[in-house]
Image (cartoon, rainbow over all chains, first blue to last red):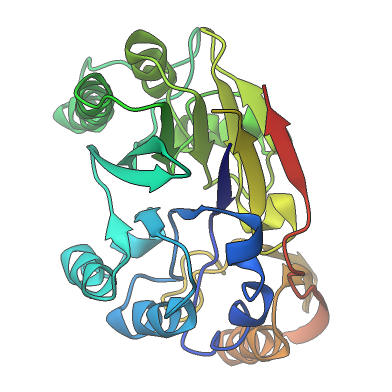
Length: 237
Length: 69
């Protein structure tokens, strides 16, 4: 049995100290690992990330994160990543890490992902250079995700994203902004390489549960969606 | 407006403008956050009356779980 606690979009600010930690005290009793699905900060400053690092200090389970679009806003993403990793929080971008859990091996494959939209109404790498750059960034993210998934062998494989791979978990958001919330290319990468579960955030107004076209469960754990400090998913391994 | 302001980056509060009134609605997780949003909007739009209708919802400890078979 592998118990995965997950939350996204905690959006820590410099005034957020003490808001999360009291709700994590029992985490080691309830979960084997904590995944954070991006948007750790409000505007992507080192000061905000430092508050979150202090909040997660000694949390008692391995903690793995991806960065989100807000974490890039102040152009300090590399420094934020370094700060988190120095504190023992593994940050993934188109790469994998493994965690031993009760004699089994859990692999977490993480990437921020990007937008572009979904099958039937997605953007294409056509026309202006800016449009090509946008879609090619998503194509590269999906290719990197697929490659990292292919390269990792484990008893269970969980994909950690910020952007959504499916439309279902966006329901509740305005359809006009779906292309900025995720891309079907991410789901295609997951279905091609295989996974047991996809965790993502980003869509505050979306829904928790979805599934890829290939049948992989997708869960949107944005804090405004789950309305608790984390949600636990249990894989029978 | 609130999402793009560099001091806020707020996604969960929306502003509705009616004549010279701004109504702020949505949910945040701390009282300090609510106060910061109201203060910032009032500073940005001094000629408007700002109405604070923001809710504060404190995240609770995770209790929900799902068995994936």
